[in-house]
Every structure is written in structure tokens, then in C-alpha cells.
Image (cartoon, rainbow, N blue to C red; front, side, top):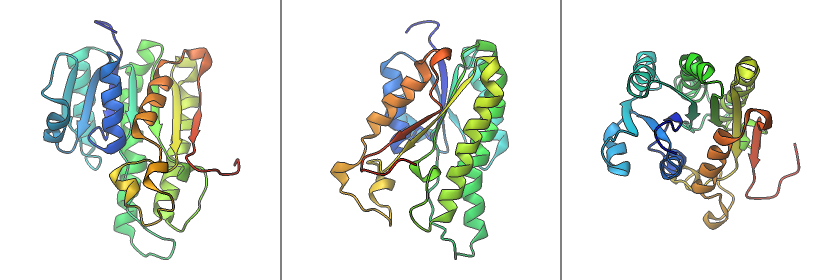
Length: 237
């Protein structure tokens, strides 16, 4: 890919999965707009900004930062072809925890921030005729296997957002995909209080990155709505 290569925004681009996505897309010639609460982390990971990648402060709790990020992306590249919502929060809130402040944070990060970015990017995704939205959901957005209700219900909601995006954008050439991995070998995954699998059996973040690129590159007439990614056997659901 060269001059007219796709322009993709990636949230959570300094995280375990997000970093793998960024590295893979850079290798394959994408132009990237990367959002992070601390852009210094992006410089540390990916070097300084270049004509093909920019860094922008993004705070999931601040709607204005989302607007500024999208605006700078368009000002820099003149287009937006894809959005990857890789930012996620996994703070544990169980069904009997009376902890509305943490639950509210889960909703802001896992649902409202991706919705806000999707809404802001939508006119540009429509304009290109082949817009893509890829949401990193979780198998936790497909079934519940523990009492961490805060994470589960917000990931179910992110799945709902993905399908709403798919429905809204279909006739406009926009395709939305939910990628739902099980255990991923990131710092958060390996330190989960519900961990029940050896680290070497977990999904490699680079594998998730390849699936993201697949979702971005499939033609409009071969879209995949959901990718369920298992590293241990589960019955179909």
C-alpha cells in the first residue's frame, strides 16, 4: 500500500492487543491515526510521528478529545477508511458489588467511547464507500461464565453496538465486525482473577491483529459480522 492506502483510527493503541494491531497495520502499509491517554507511550512503542502515522491524545471520558482526534485525522489525511475500537476496561464488578462509580467507568470505556467514535467517523466511512468498523469485544460479550457482571454486560452492549453499526451502515458500504477472543496473552489477560488456563495456551495478540486486518480488507460482498476466537474448547453458543 502506498499513497492512497487506507486511513484507520485505532483506540487503545498502546495496549497489548492494540499495539499488536498497530504493528501489523504499519507493516502492511496502512496510514494510522493512533489515540492514547498518553501519547508518549506511542512514541516509545512506535517512534516519532511520520507522514503515515499520527498520535493524538484521547480520553474515553472526554467527548471533546474524540472530536479533536477525528478532526485532526481528517485534517491530516483527508479521509477515514476504518475505525478499530481496541480500548477496553476490565475492572471487576460482580453482581453483588454496589459500585456504581466503577460500573459507570466500564460503560464509558467499553460502550460509550466506541459509540462516540463510530458516530464521529461515520460520515467519512460512508464517503469512502468501503468503511470498516472493527470492535474488539470478547467471548465475554457472547456468554457469561463468571459473576463479573460489569465486564460482561458492557461487552454484550458493545456487541449490540457492532450489530447496530452494521445495520445502519450496510447500504452505505460500511461493514462492522466484532472480534471476540477468549484468553489473550496480554498483561491484563495473564493477571485476570478468573484465569483458568496456562499462559502458553492463550491466544497471541498478533493473531488478533491478523484477524483485524482480515476484517478491514474483506470486500463488501464478503463481510464477517462476528469472529469467535477460542483457545480452549467450548460448546457452540
